[in-house]
Amino acid sequence: MAEVLYQRASRMPRHSLYSLSVSSLGKLNEEDPPPQRSPLEKLTIEMCQDEQTIKELVVGRRIGFYKVRGEIGSGTFSRVKMAFHALTKDKVAIKVLDKTRLDVKAQKLLSRETSCMEALQHANIVRLYEVVESHSRLYLVLEYAGGGDLHTQICSEGRLSETEAKLTFAQVLSAIKHMHDRNIIHRDLKAENVLYACNGCVKVADFGFSTRVTNGNDMLDTFCGSPHYAAPELFKDKCYMGPPVDVWAMGVLLLFMVTGTMPFRSDTMGKLKLAIIQGAYTLPEWVSEPCQRLICGILKRIPEERYAVDQMVGCDWLLPVEYPWTGITAVPLSPLHLADAEPSELNDEEKEVKASLEELGVTMEHIRQNQGKGSHSPISGLYNIILHRTQKRRGTETVPVVRGLVRDQKRESLRAYRGLIHSSKLCVVQ
Ligand code: ATP
Ligand code: MG
View 1 (cartoon, rainbow, N blue to C red):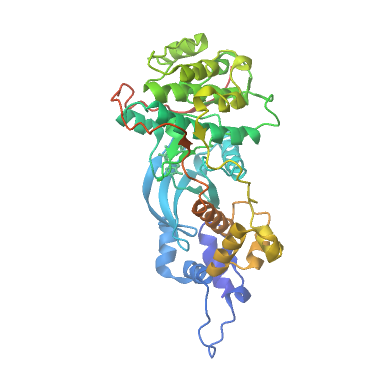
View 2: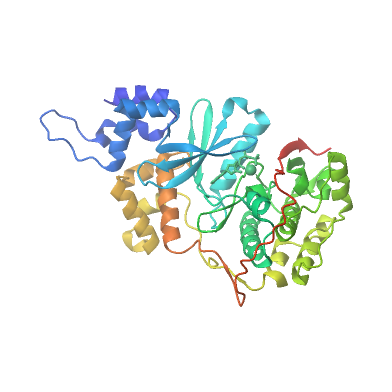
C-alpha cells in the first residue's frame, strides 16, 4: 500500500500528505471491518487510488487538496484560478506560476513573495494559505477576494465619494503600516492590486515585488512596479529607501480615488518620467481641504519631506475613521502551539481551531511532523484556512466606520480613466 502511495505521489505535485504511512492510515486486514476513516484520510486515499481524482490532479482540475473551478484573473507573471478546499469547502484563489518561465531574478522575487506573505496576517492583506509545488509550477493558495479590484471599480463607476475613499484608503494604510512595521515593502501598490472581499473589506494583493529590509533606511536599487505610481527618486537616483516609495504610491492612489484621474499621465514614458520628477499635479477645488492637505503631504518630491505612515494615520482627514480590528493580536503562523500546549493554555479561538482540525482528522502527530515546513504543506493550508475562518467569524474583518458621517451613496460618473491598466515593470535603477 505504501509503495502504491509513493509511486502515484511521484507523478503529482509534491504533497507531503501523499506520503502518509500505512500505520497512519490504519491496518488493512481482510477480516477486519472497514476502518472508520477521517475526512483527511479519505481524501488522501482518494488522491492516491481513485482514478477520477488522479486524472483531475494530472490535468490540473485539482491542485493538492483544492478543486479548481475556473480562471478569475491573470497578471504579467501568473494566471489566477478560483478553487475550493476539498475538506473545508472554503473558496480560495490560486495564483499559478510557471517555474520554467522564471529566470533567476524572477525566482528570487517569487521566493520573496511567499516569504513576505507568510509573515503577514492582517485583515486588509490577502492571506497566503499554502504553497503547492510541482516540477514545473508553483501554486500560491490565497484568500479569495471576490469583490473585484479598485481600478475596475473606478473605471466603471467613476470616482469614489470622499467617505468611500476614506474607508478604502484607511484600510490600505492600515495594511501598509502593518507591512512597514515588519520591514516589508510592497513596491507595487496600485489600484489594480487593491481588491475587495465580498463583504467590502479591502485586501491589498500581489506581493510579487515585495521585499524585506533590515530597517526603513535600507537602500534598494531595483525599479519595481507601475511607472504611473513610481516615486520621483526611482527615476532620478541609483538607490532609494523603501517606505517612502510605498507612501508616494499611496498618494497617487488617493488622488485617483477621489478624482477618478491619475495625477501623472503622458503618452510617452519620457514625458511621464518628467512629469513625476517635476511633481506637478492638479487637484480639483471640490476635494476637501483635509484631503488636499494629506495628498500634498504625501506627493512631496523629496522622500525625506514626504509624510511618514504614522503621520498619515494621524491626519485630520482620517480622524473620524474607526478601525474595528485595532488591538487584535497576531496568532502563531504555525499550528505547533496547538499540539504542544495544555488545553488550559489555549484561548477560545485556539480551542475552536484545534477542534475543527481534529474533526477533519488532523492529529497532533501530523502537526508535529509539519514543523518547519512553513506554508509548503497541506496541514499548514488547513490550519491557515480554519484559523482565518474562525477569526472572521469572531468579527475581525468588518469594514471600518466613519464616525458622525452618513454613508454617501451618490456616485459621479467621471469615466475619464476607463481601460488603462498600469502594468508593472522590473529593472535596475540606472
Ligand atoms: P501584475 O504584476 O500584472 O499585477 P501578477 O502576475 O503579479 O500581476 P496578481 O496581481 O497577483 O498577479 O493577480 C492577477 C489578477 O488576479 C488580479 O488583478 C486579480 O484580478 C486576480 N486575483 C489575484 N489575487 C486574487 C485573490 N486573492 N482573489 C481574487 N482575485 C485575485
Ligand atoms: Mg497585480
